[in-house]
Image (tube, rainbow, N blue to C red; front, side, top):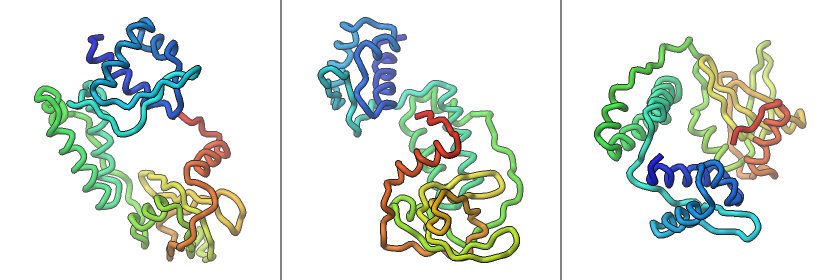
Amino acid sequence: MTRSQRLLALIEILRRHRFPVAGAVLASELGITLRTLYRDIGTLKEQGASIEGVAGLGFVLHPGFTLPPLMFTEEEIEALVLGSRWVAGRADERLGHAARNALSKIATVLPSALRDELEASALLVGPGTSMMHSAIAQPIIRNTIKAELKAEIIYRDLKGIESSRTIWPFALGYFDDSRVLVTWCELRNGFRHFRADRIMTFTALQERYPRRRQALLKAWRLHQGIVDQQ
């Protein structure tokens, strides 16, 4: 591993952690001595990285720092292309357009050799199964989630029975054949999942729900038995 690769790796490790990481842990993961680690951290600080040393805890990277140019491995490029192609083909028009724009922006700052890898990626996304279209524009749902607002919906279940719910929407799941809104339902006093194509009406309220979206997502993962990979 070259020194430039090591500096990039150090930044990525720090980005993965929201809380301070002990110097010994960082040095061990990079396979270097503490002295080399301190020197590398000093170099990154000189380049503008806001890395804070917390006494007794370690180092933490504050948001807002990037190291140009973007340096991806071939597999990372393949992952970006495959993910962007899936979004472009499966998500709504606005997200698909954003995915194509993001890939174009990445291509403009990549070194020429890596740009060629991006443009020549042989990983393709096949056609998906037919999906029922939602009567509700997904950008409206996503904006409500981002704003952490309650919403009122009219939902039609599998038997065709309609019900009115006040929900706290905090995630939207993308599947090949459906989109599933993950919520806390006030009627059921618990987590509930609603297929987007069965939501007849969706009205964002001006009232924020009492828990943060991040806390709801964490509690939902525990409820579902999902191991958090973050």
